[in-house]
Length: 217
Image (cartoon, rainbow, N blue to C red; front, side):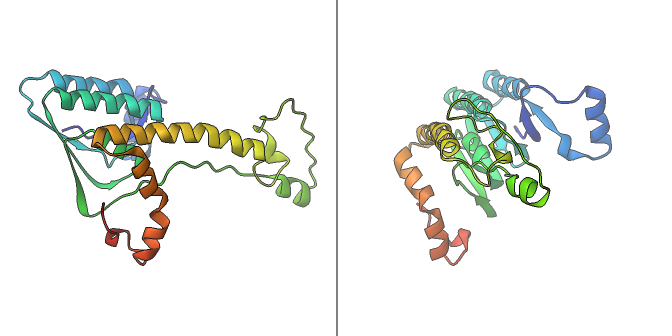
């Protein structure tokens, strides 16, 4: 069984004593899973002749960046290709967890569970109204070039067209890579998968808000 618990990280953010103390105090929010440790466990399962089947339980894994998740997905794909049966089970599978579950031979979802793919988004806070209109603070910002949006929350109330264009550029590339990985693992057309995700709001509305009652494809 591979059942990682915590946030997937490349390096622990705290020292061993602090992590041990957090576990003793029952602070599960500080749990972390080191990428290389998870990869070693998958590699060991692939090479162990006594293991015929691997169960993935991913509900307690907090996915990291897409690059790290793709490394784990690749390792799981190689585990499956080695002849080991990989079975994934989840109660509530999010978008990052599904990238890993998709590498399994079979995926099982709790009857009362959920799986939701909704795409990528980015949300930032903008402070101009609070700073200037409420506190009387004037921010003088000097920028060179068009795509310089790091400090614009202090002078604007919403994202500039250039910031939106830049975010859309990189997020679209990441999203297409995600869809391609899912499509390759589950033998699905990425374009068709994207179309179904785009139609999710209409599907939920047609089902009266009951996601579980939506037709499956």
